[in-house]
Length: 86
Image 1 (cartoon, rainbow, N blue to C red):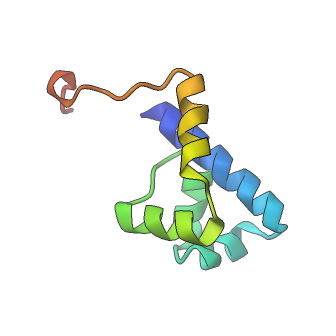
Image 2: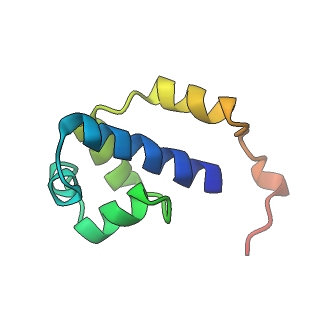
């Protein structure tokens, strides 16, 4: 899960740099709070599903490219049957 947080945050950071805007402006653009945006960009948490959709649409994240990057970094889907709930 950590790789997803880190790489989604990195992707969002580079999108924000591309737009040349502040974290506050990017949060507003993505329809999420500044605190939520900062935590996501810093890899501290993943967005809720609704926020994820807003972020993808508003920032123009290419999901195919994102998936390719995380797979290259070693991410593999977890088998939910073998994952312990803590």
